[in-house]
Each structure stands twice: as structure tokens, then as C-alpha cells.
Length: 190
Image (cartoon, rainbow, N blue to C red; front, top):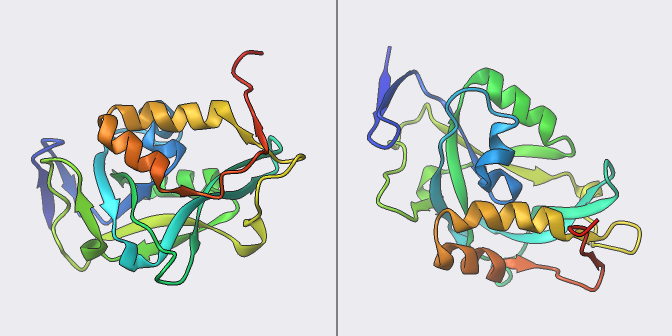
């Protein structure tokens, strides 16, 4: 039985296997902890553009008639780095996130595609560790529209999460979002 003692969490985990890479609202501790039960502390990281994706306003959220962040597979010239966080999840928490991220599929990220954005080290490069990213299903990849606008309240949740890791991290987040458009609602003053 292997144990993993992370110098950041300072706790032992029996046979850790699953981590999630969050690139939108999951960066925010409060948003993430609504789904994650137990320890869900995060490490700020950057996904290499060689992974072949970019973050964009392209996920159609029919629950609240909005467009939120997703990632899309693109050619090498259009790919971008994506900053976010990774965090360890139990099998139960992985199921909880699968339910939360309905409309997305889990895709495995090779650990060598990630770099830490802090002094906190990444998990060891062991074959039994999986780092997952939630990628929108193709039929959910749609630009914001009048009926499905982007919401300021959603962006604020993301930015609040980013600010925990500093101004540079937050600027990088904003600068690596694609598909901004005019379909935007400031819903924070209702």
C-alpha cells in the first residue's frame, strides 16, 4: 500500500489516484468546496499549450440559461496555456464532480503537461495518478448568445478564486479566455 505525504497538505493519503484540474469556477475555494467533501486544498498550476486546448466562453449551461467557461480542442496554432488549480479527490468526490460537471467529459492530463505556479510541488510522476480535466461535450460547445449570455456573477466567482493566487495569476486567467463577445449581463446588482 503506497502513501503520499504532500508537503503542502501535510497529510497522508492512502493510495491517492485522482486529481482534478479546475480552470473556471472550481478555482474558487467556496465553489469547489460546495461539491468536495473533506480536503480539497488546491495547488495553482498551468496547463501546457502542447496539450492542445484553450479556455473559452463556450459551454451552454441550460440550468440557468447562461454561457460559462469550457475548454475546446484546437489546432496547435490556436492552443493556449490554461492556468487553474489541481486538487486531490477521493473516489466519492470524483463522483460528486462528475455529477456537478454534467455536460462535460473527463479527459486525462499527463502530469508532464502541468507546471506548478507556486513553490508547492506537483504530485509525484507515478503511473497510478490520474489528473482529470472536464471538457464540454461537443453539442454543448456554443458561443454566448442573447438567450444564453455570459454572467458577471460567474466571472466574479472565477476571479475571486484567481485573486487568491495573486494579480499575475488573475491577469493570465483573463488573458487566456477566448470567445468574449457582446452577450454579457451584469447580474450582480439585482
